Amino acid sequence: MYLCGPTVYNYAHIGNARPAVVFDLLARVLRRHYKLTFARNFTDVDDKINAASIETGKPINEITERFMQIYNEDMAALGVLPPDIEPRATEHIGEMVVMIEALVENGFAYESSNHVLFDVESYADYGALSNRSLREMIAGARVEVADYKRNAHDFVLWKPSTPELPGWDSPWGRGRPGWHIECSAMAAKHLGDTIDIHAGGQDLIFPHHENELAQSRCAHDGADFARYWVHNGFLSIDHEKMSKSLGNVLLVHKLIESVPGEVVRLALLSAHYRQPLDWSDETVDSARRMLDRLYGAIRGIEVGEEARADAVPLESVVAALEDDLNTPRAMAEFFGLAKTLNKETDASEQEKLAAAMVATGDLLGLLQNDPEAWFAGHVEGELSAEDINAIIDKRNAARAAKDFAAADTFRDELAAAGVQIEDGPEGTTWRRA
Image (cartoon, rainbow, N blue to C red):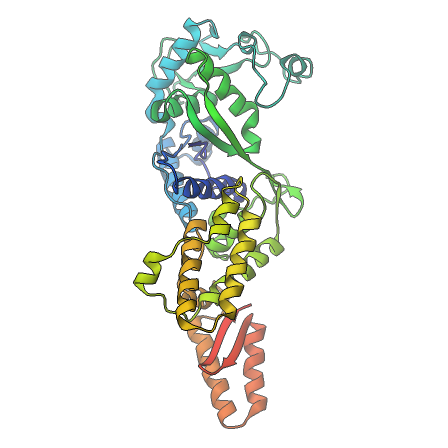
């Protein structure tokens, strides 16, 4: 499986995180039955990176190295496991040049003014992936044909670099690759001419994936490029498209300062991956409440090593995930298991059910924290666990002294801070609302 990864010149936004989380889950599900090789690339040569270097005055490799590391750390906070292969575009320039040479030699690409371009009219099936007619695309084109292009939709495979820009020697002079050829060359290098699954966001279907498909098939004597194309739906913010002009770009790096990564992960999985997902405060609050219910079900239940080793994910959850990653149905089944556990009174059965919940959580990338740590977790501006326990101690002392007015004051103080408390036979427990 190949997933188009980020262009590393800035922090990843929440829209970038959706494919990372969705296809991390797909990889987890596939590994139950198949030997999977999963590649997710880094685009570390791009005009946006060049612009960031000029704007900040920092070397290109300093920018790319920094944001590659930050991306991996931020995705790890969302429970995204590392891919098997993480190729960088700059490490595959030789493979790109060889692929471009094959396209030129076979009559699918042409050189013009130190550029090399793919001739879309040379490939009869161009537009099939995105269900677009080339004739209609040309008729509706709003872009002018550059003087080095035969027609508007020919796309760049190689372009010249001025001295201040990154560049590599090639048969067409010093230059750098176009974006589309990068993924084709990296996928072929690590996964072969034909791969099983190509994944990415719906926004990449055209032109990126359409162009990848065309150039890969033409460079490999018509061999199919990907047997299955899998795309996640768009993500909006409060029913608006996320954009810099609207000022609503939500960066994962900033978000996880105040929202636990598991909450972000569950929120991203709350809708079916192919459907649009609207991100809002309610999306986050709902995911947090859902996780509170799941952690609450296993809280206080000791799961021994033997029970954990014998546990497997709930069969109905697995069935839902194997049905086109139906995460809404999978979560409904997961909550059914939690409900069963909440009703169970036999300690042995409780342990088995809790172990099954943990195993199911492992598959989903959820329930990765200790329940007590989960409920104690806080962010800047919130009461710490120590503060909460101190207030509870004061409340309990007031209750023991029959000063119920003071006890109610302490309860109200906790409630105002978003902390709910429950009195039970084992004492007072608490969680964040």
